[in-house]
Structures are given as C-alpha cells and as structure tokens.
Image (cartoon, rainbow, N blue to C red; front, side, top):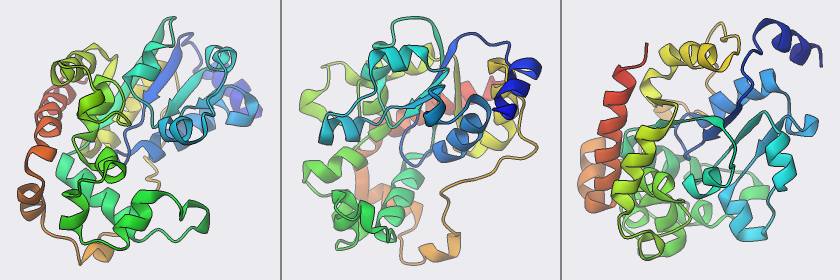
Length: 254
C-alpha cells in the first residue's frame, strides 16, 4: 500500500488505464513484474491479468467491471481482447525476433519442470519432440504457439489459427501495431523501459530486472537461428515482416 501511495504522489499523473499485450516469450514477465510493483497486485484489484489460453481452456475471464476498474491490464491476450476495453487506454507491446522467440519458447517448454503446468500441451510436446518436429508440427495445439504468433496476436488473437483469422489478418496486424501508443523490441527494452515509464507516469526502475530468462549455456542442443529460420519458413514470415516494422518504430522512440 505504501508503494502505491508514493507512486500516486510521485509518478501517478497518468489517468488512463495501461494495457500491455504480452506476446509469449517477448520479455513480458520483466515488464509485468515492474508494473505490478507500481500499480499493485491482482489481489488489490488495480491489476488484472487477461490470459487468452486460460479463457480458452476454462472460460475464466475477469469481469468487465474488474477490467474497467483496473489501472493495469496485461497478459497473453490479443487485439480482440483489447478492443473490448471500450474506453481510452494507453496500449503497448514488445516484439521479438521471431526465430529467437520460437527458440526461447521451445527451450522454456522443454526444460519446464513444474508439475502444475505439466498438462499444458506445448510443454509435453517439446519434451518429446526435436525442435524441427516441434516447429513444423501440424498439430493445432502446437501451431498456436509457433506459427506467426506475433502477427496473429495483433491481428486478433494467437489462439485463432489461420482459418479462423480475418482474411486480411496480416494487414490488420500491421495496422494495429502502428495504432499502439508505444512499441519496442526486446533487445531495446533496457533502454526503452524508462521512456515507457515516463510516458505512463511511473518511476523508472534503477535497472531492468529480467524475469523468466534462461541461461544461454543451457541451450546447447538448439539449432542456430539461421538453421531454425530455414526450418520454419512461412511459419515465421509474417512475424518477420511485422518485427521489421517494430524495429523501425522502436528507432523512433525518444
């Protein structure tokens, strides 16, 4: 409570709700950790986590009243979810090189040991499949997390595969990306997080605390980014185009 009071006094001039579209394995855990420390936990009601997979699997979704009253809404959600928040809000996202994102997701799943998440299908699949078999699988439960995840998230939702996407989903993804209030890429997060905080009205962290990051030396059995890109082909082409736009937008951040 004291942290929240101080933030309201020293850096809480922003009155708009802040919405973070957290694309899996795009540095979102680091952002959520810092913002929840400033805005307040989910228990306080000032933060609401909106997870598209949880909604898909269980039907559990925060109430509209809870979402409207929260100061910070974040989670593995997509544009469909954001568009339902009808009033004005500050919305942002972080994109990542699509090959690096997929390698990181596969590594995360393959090395995950939590029994609580063991039934989560991609975790089971990654622990039984090579990277090539995983990222080229035709199983919808895997493709959901691999095929052009960033573009599908911003077009509508990453839980919707191609046949369920709008016909112009790639164009929509680009349009929505450009419509966001703030866009950066994961490799620039350390430099851009203080700028993002200033725009929102939060005090910047003294340093960016990276959360949910694995040690690089533990990834010895993964292919090189060049080999991984060749394996994935069109399954990352839309993401690559969107990421290139995000890089250009990130260069404009001051």
